[in-house]
Image (cartoon, rainbow, N blue to C red; front, side, top):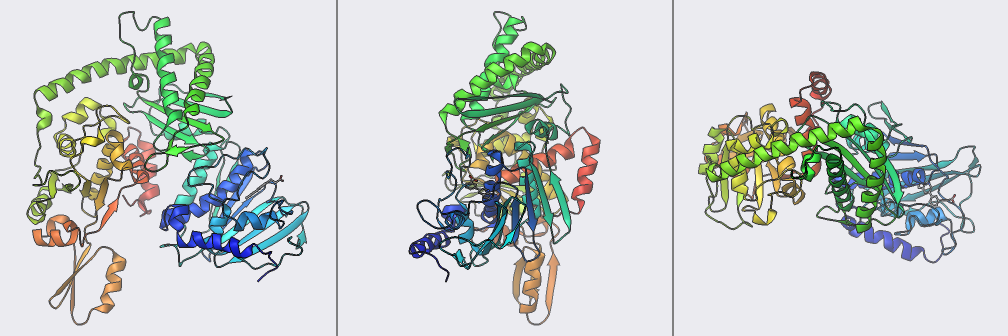
Length: 635
Ligand code: 0RA
């Protein structure tokens, strides 16, 4: 081993702890955990950009399965670390939690599972190499098998290996395949994040190159989150051309808000803290909502749009059709919620409220037309809401919502036991009713295409019988976005399983259902209660033995293992299976394959629904072309 001082043994024990319990540091060892390694390394470069020293970050996927991240920042320090007495670079890559706070001026804003430190990436890699371009010199360090240094330090320091006029840091690593379930980096996932980062960090150039496919892409957003709002509204009809943008700092918290209205009936608010998508919202979002409602009500009274006796606008009136981004940079973020994506700091609420109040009033005072169109829009929403309230009351009074459609209930009433299985088609529904374990499985057959909720207003959505049956069977009510009538405590089921055919129609129905859940019962997704059932693709019979395969790969792996004559039947739909087969392959908890729906799946479903169902023809066509060959849409 190298010239490494006495603490090396303890250091490597730290990294060993990461290898023993990787989940504690990166969440999981599946594809998501794998990509966390990339986010960790990219985040370090992003921090350098946030500190104002880095303008470009390049990412390469290499043929050997490794990945390289290069930035043009100051370069990781290679001088003697004040406490540990060896090169700071070594410390950063081998000591847990040694990230950040090297110089107190650096505004380090990482958080959540991000910011666990470069040493965690090192611990989970079969090799990792660092190149530092700094002060005219190039330094190189290399680690193997989970962070063991292979380069000799001289007097505790790295020896430069060349002169250079470049500046920056290059980190390359290959994830350890004895730790991860998969070590295949997905270009799509990485590109999506880099694109998001380009919106969140205006003026930063991010490039991606895949050596396996030759693909090269650049992401750069002069306009930052304003560009993101435009992008999100690309397929929608908008009320005002301009995107409203306000920004300022309050209480050492930087706030940026951008929004624009569409003619949709729904609201889309994306929020971020320190470049992390706070999927569950939090204090920054509630600060924005409160301030926005208050200010629009104030103006509406001032200009006489709301008469004295009239109701105030509710929050959802003023946000009807809005696409908004709420972004904060917080020096010490605290995250809460199931997926640690809900911002908890109460000072963020106040900061957003203050910045938005002050800055938006400056804007509205100078842009009366925009203000008026927002108030008009809120007025329409208020009227619609009143009408919907009537419909809702009538529906409830006529107890139409009490209809259960074709639901075959389970005999158990225990919400921690019952599974609600939504089955495509009456014939598969019939088999499922016969084949299920009725003690805990409820079956609801869905006929035809589930209502496309995206385009319809609430009154229509809840008058749809299939939707009513689903709402009823789950028992939590429903709401738009957060809150409203929805109450997860009232749930009657512990799992909702979507079971559709493995074909285009099937994935379409699943997409529509996910869009519905995402829009009207998002907490079910956050809490991980929604699943998709995976029906088998093949039935393989050899002699008396019958086996089922759920993918082409599984089939290819099985074939050589079977002796004698084999017969392969490809299932076209669930309807082809008899009740016993359906039980064995798709319903029986011991043998079936279920995939939990993640929030990413639901967001993807929303995007697809938007594009496929939207009014605008062109993006739809482009989308279909772009994705025709992309079998990745695995909803
Ligand atoms: C600590 C202190 C300084 C820079 C960095 C870390 C740094 C880390 C990474 C990781 C990837 N790229 C990076 N670039 C910089 C500041 C050192 C100074 O004062 O010059």
